Length: 119
Image (tube, rainbow, N blue to C red; front, side):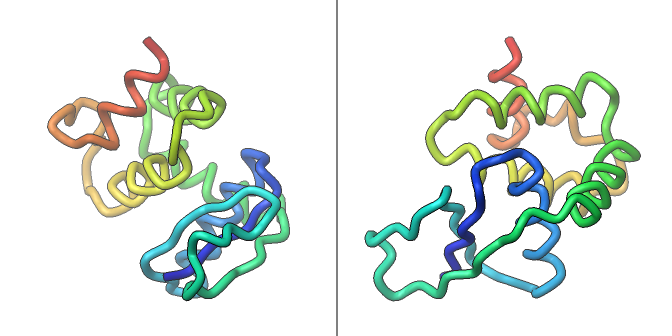
């Protein structure tokens, strides 16, 4: 398991998403600003916010989501729901792996959770 330590900002989270793909990290958990001691046997990957990497993820999402879906992702991040970073990462994984727009697929928990945050 890899713990991604980032600064808590949206851009920092987007940078972390980029680096998951860049470094082919598997089984990731997000942590804000300090290492969690609950994951004793995990590796820690320190994420330094990089606007170029964050913008690449944003551009990819913008091409695959509607304007409304794109905004829902941001609002869900701001919700501070428990484990929102992991939920949103699974949403982003689904977005990038699907050849079609996934916003209407409410059978997937990650899509449903993102939609619920904006209702």
